[in-house]
Image (cartoon, rainbow, N blue to C red; front, top):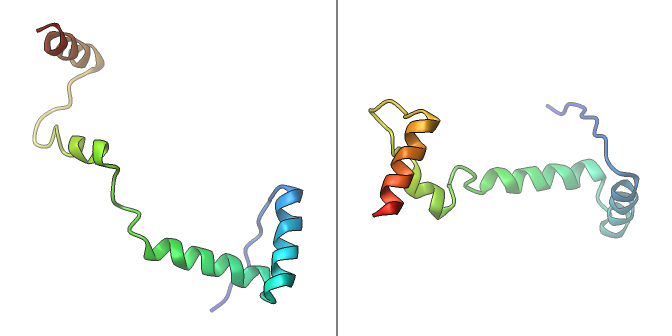
Length: 79
């Protein structure tokens, strides 16, 4: 079932969308729909490697407060 969606975009983007739509002979709504379908196909739940290493680091323990984290950081880096 199709539903309506209203977007607020920069006028330059709207002009580009209209031109692109005419060149590809596709309605703008179909172009936008295709874009979101492709986004859904991508695994957007994967984290960058540096964040992935941190994921779950405090699992099962209380997260230290900011002062405690700073103390731990300085202790680790002063040695």
